Image (cartoon, rainbow, N blue to C red; front, side):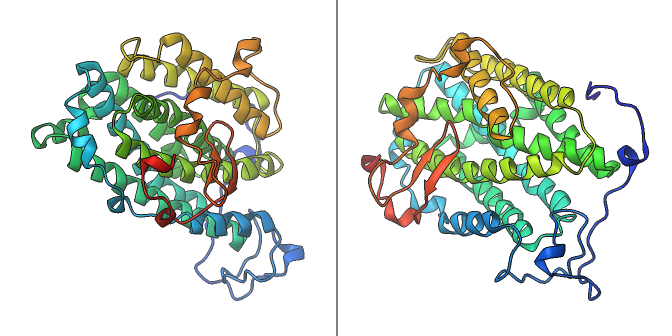
Length: 361
């Protein structure tokens, strides 16, 4: 599938290949004065007492403290609630789970390719934890599907990306952004794959999350919303990781501002197309207009976080139409998780064992 990225003049830096780190490099230099995120001389030993990027060690600790197991969350009420959903809500529930499963599946496969070139061990550790969390998310979606969706419909959910043309096109495009780097690991393709990761972590999940929070706001599927809340919290740490990496990458890799904006706009268009296809105007509280407003609002926030002006100038895109749903993803009590799922403002993390269920939200 063509990527339709802006045409750039070819030069030596554009076509220069990325170098995969050796497993062990005894001639490397782990001194922090020489340490860089890419193109450094790491020995590949994890010396984390003296680091160049303290934000990475702090983020890693937060990610580790966020450990949880989906099977410990009770979703038995959702088995009953599923039959009380309208046909449109059931279709959206099934389709969004299928799409989210795809997103975390390809992330689990893709991140190791990007990680293999990182030469700052503290940053590499964050990506290693992200891989583990993406695997946990897949386990969580499967737990949800296998528990709630009737046995005769589960294969349809897993294979929905094969049978739904819009979803298949969406999945193929997302995967192609990663695959072009794997097939031709140039520095320019690395930047595109890194930015695509940020778009996936920062934009692609959130209309789906809002759908589950919307159901929860109507006292439907509370167990699923609990699981989504914890996945959402993990994804915010991934968003924060790429908000640190993208500005650094812009100083290192060939790219253009036009390219960044075009990729953002393409992501927004596809996210709106998919959400309108699977939800449309058939779900109470979600419309094509609110989907567009929310997705463009989110894109502007993600651009601002990497130091770029907003892409969508209309004042309406300064406000989220789903602000009333924030309480379903953000525990405000002192000592519990505080994670604004709109802006990735993670301020603290706790073990999921501290959350006893939906009543605490």
